[in-house]
Length: 297
Image (cartoon, rainbow, N blue to C red; front, side, top):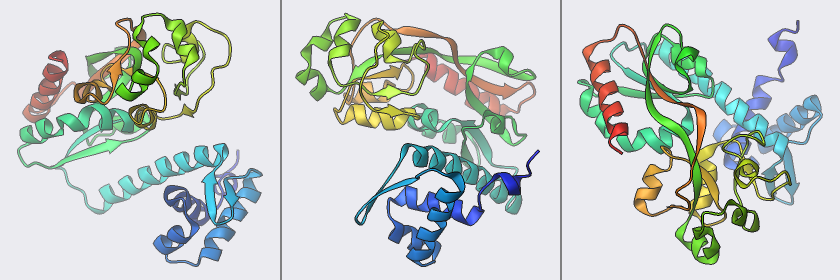
């Protein structure tokens, strides 16, 4: 078995690449890292050589991530974020902090509009949101509540209470519907004739346009590995998207998105609020408030 040192490229090179990917600029990345721009370029070139893939597409002074670059940047960001969180916890242990864990998209789309509700119930006001793409992070001892997608048997030893179903339906912006008024019908086939935004999913998944439309042919349009960037494109009027019911609630309320059909598709799994079997009064109060809020929508 290869060691981590043998399997992974140099950490400095990955840090330089992540900063460049985040800023979209070698110059800004170099400034953040307090090194020369040539050093950043050298790190990225060494990384591309080591992996035998092109990470950045260069056009004059402009750079853009390739598909491989986007995949690596997201993985590095998640990994470095996990390391940073661990270092912060070890450097400044604080047992009074109330930690809620969930995926980034769910935190942004559903939990943040309810953040004031959470903080109002935590007596010292010290709440920390832990976002991660690794579900194991939410089983850590310091996590009071987590929100996860799956089924109760996925989390033995914990108490799982359903927050909302895994329900999907098509949405678009008001401006997009004005351009394509036929989307107001319930017929799924009309979606094959308009620009679509895709979430990375299996072809037969309920959140895949091919499954929704009932076609085997390839459908054009950009594909997103994360939900929120896709929703930003939908709000901007650049395509129709399949939205999670709980995730799109705020945008629907604000009129940024419109639900296009009464029909929806249900995933076999659902979103659950997870706590330990033995909890204190604050955890119980926050958990119940979130459950009540979800039930009232």
